[in-house]
Image (cartoon, rainbow over all chains, first blue to last red; front, top):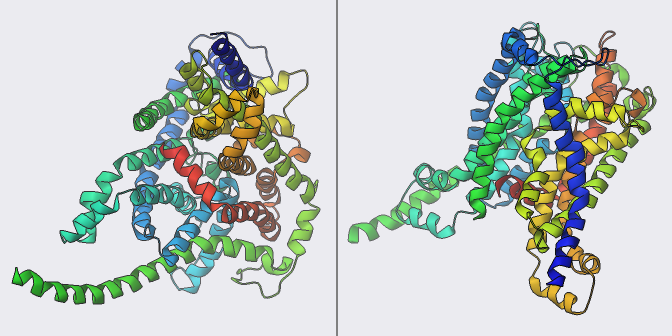
Length: 292
Length: 296
């Protein structure tokens, strides 16, 4: 009896540093953010309670809704590309032969480098004067004058960023899909092969159904990541042209830091966090279920 | 029956021919993909080794005509100098690793092995950062750091604390699971020998979960080394900048007189290469971390 009580206390003692850390650096900031969202906090004047004014302002803020809409559009475009692309790659490289193993390892390399740094490298590749993509296109005779990939035309900028991000994160989904495909029991695959099913029939009837949970989870991770996109947009277009490529986090960043509308920024953060929460809850429900 | 046996060898022969062709096709596709994935990195790194003149040439060259360390030399002395920025990134990453391990090893141990009351609630509380994206917490964290008696804005410790916030849920999850997987008998033997819980942690548990610790360190390093937005918000003094931040700043600052892409690519290469080398060396831990963290 005494022993268990002692162990309870010891356990709590071991947990204390982490609990304190999360309380101070995650829970408290979160509560403060909620509090701030009801004030007109800026670093210049002392904060005043403004009730729901920030949320009212957010509702009427066309640029905020535009950024949110833009982020959602970006998410809706990039997610299927990442899912289908990642899955096709996984089908290709899941068998453990030397070449496929190497290909798998190489596809994953861009995932490990930083998004900020890779975005900078792509700014150079896309550059109209110094960039190799324009150079290659003109050497191939496909274009007569350089294309302004970034920051001049909104759609082209978005697609260029999507191209670079797909290159950067395709390997993430692929890796998880490969793990799921390899976890399919060999007997199931053999059974379908004896039945004479073709590769694509097998993919449709066996591989996809058996990796469904992974597909769903990777989709959620990708959706959450895309809704929070910042680095690539900040570096590659900085919202140009005319804030048409400003994502939600970028817009919140602009309001909070360069403009110092901290209270308003907090309200916007809260709205975004609420949207993300929906996806996180689904994701957690899915992961929980697998533990049982 | 006979039809089947008749068809088998034929089908097999056919599938061998077709299969052979398919194998070449798959091989060709694999190679093409490898070229596409590697090209941006390889061309970036080659740009870093061009002479200053060639790096700024219009039209650009694909391959350097002459190898040079010009660009690295310019980066070496750019503003506070490359050693400072590289050092800042490295210190932040190591602090993040240290904080993460100091918090998640004991916490994971307690969650896996002690009859703590309200364990499930505590676990969910510790995973709070999974539910609230850190991007949304930057403003209050910035204000807190700015108002502390010892300011944490513009410090690497402050940035490492933020990176620890980001990295904590994943790390705790990995640590708890691997402590749970340690066989009971090992612990019981030590308990009957009268070892204290801390001795048991040190002598039995930590050696048993080394792979998990490596995974946690690896991901803490990569997260911290690559993180951009938090550094942008918390750091405003150029001497505290991390590598991604100084590179993004250098690009903006040199863009008026024509961006110095030679120097920038030297920096990009220096920022990328540690991650790639670590990945190639520790692939096993990477794969384990990603699949455990994301799927379980």
